[in-house]
Length: 116
Image 1: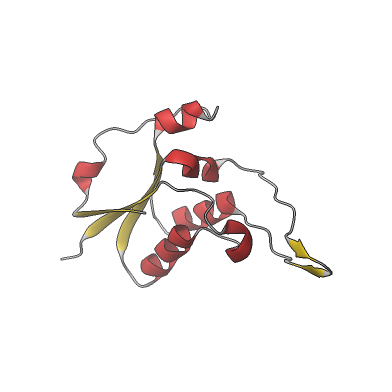
Image 2: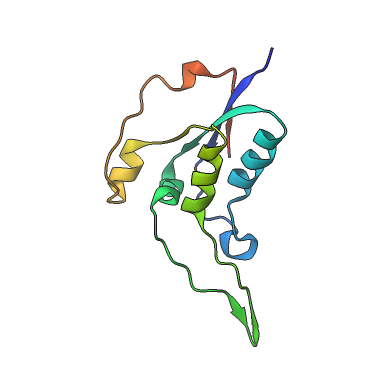
């Protein structure tokens, strides 16, 4: 029997310039690709991942430029395309000026919850 897991991302924007993505979102892509049943909950600063059209200037060191800026909203859209539900904490979003949604009774649906 497959176990459903919920991955909670609280510390947003960790290493996103160096790695061009969030490590937990990337990890969820890899797990889902291997057949894992999982969903994602964004809280804290990570609620901003769902805001579309964020633009980040490429990171440069002298003449060397990192050419692929992070596209966190695109990463989430791609993950949802793999039938992974992505939730967010409404209070955290409201605190950052992001319009509200709905989140209720979520944790009881999962066999395991991982908070990153």
